Amino acid sequence: MSVIGHPSARAEHPDRTAPDGLGAALIGLGVLGILGSAVQLAAPGSAHLLPWGATILLATAAALLTLPRVGRPGRHAARALSLIVLVSAATAVAEHLAAGPGVPVGSFTHSWYGGGTAPLAPGLLGQSALLLLLASLRAGPQLGRFGRRVAGRLRRGADRG
Image (cartoon, rainbow, N blue to C red):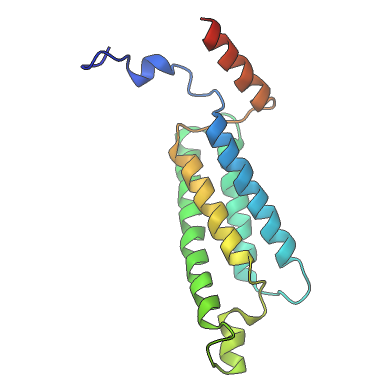
């Protein structure tokens, strides 16, 4: 029992390997954003390597968060990868805004700032990075083979007991 009479967090949640519903939802939304940015980057005319690198980093972070038995080092690595992509995506969004149609810049500058990349990809990558970062800050959802089914059974078992 804690000082104010409530059971401690460890007593309420003794099994931290159980999937967490909110964490799973954050990871799922992050993966959807990763897939959306990959589809847009695969469109003809987008030949920049940096967004593809960020996509690969986010896919790695999502895999680290969903693999069973990764533990704290995996969550820390996923958090670091997500933070790197979040900073690079924010920079890319700022560069896209600087090279927008309302700002008169030369064609070389427009191309350098992201003229050939898909305009939605940096935003999607940033959103996905933020979602995965939030998922890594939680108790560490580890989705096993039957993650959602197990989570439902654990909840029903906790409600009965």
